[in-house]
Length: 326
Image (cartoon, rainbow, N blue to C red; front, top):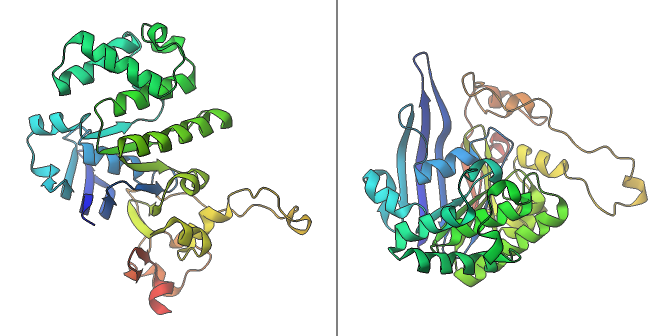
């Protein structure tokens, strides 16, 4: 199957007068039509920067994007700013973190929803408003005719997130990036938002890249997972295989830190596993494997050389010296 998005050797760098930092370093990634891909890792691993690089929403300069980002057969990095602007919000869209700061506080929901529809579909204001109401109803906003006249501050966090989803889907995008769509929401609202995204994916046949640090969300939503650490992919696998048999120590650490519901009595006193340390400063990366200072399974070679990428199957890869040595 031909991927809808194919990223090859993506390097996203941020320049200052003193130094250059690579937030994404040599990323390879593909998304197939109709699939939900999970992009996971701790904060600072490069997940959001990857999405913003694809949509070219990073200020340039100081940001510099290199490599290849092929969407529907077109390399986005070769498009003009005007051509990219036409794609963004139409065929390509994104649900951003923190809906309160992503929505304009001085514009009504009506103004913000209809703007994108009118821009990309060239329809009248009345037709755009009718379509906006349909999408508010689709994302289950109660009383959309009343809510559409509200300002963002008058809506709850869950309702603002639904508005963001309605805005992102209003032009029927082929690919949607959902960046931490359930952050700061209570568990009931989280479940409703995930159910909503799954339902809309089926109805609109949209591919989704789900960006999150929550592996519970990935287990529920994704069919395939890409694990990032310090700007690089360390493991990629179908979701069932990843949860059943994680091959990278970092992935095992992430899975081991998830609280288990319904543990046996003998396990109740067991402490949650933790990954010692923090994600390294991208301005001062360790030599060799970037994870080795935090890894309980490291070998001498891990501190000296960057690990190779090992292919374990058609959709399975891991970047680790233990797999190479084994």
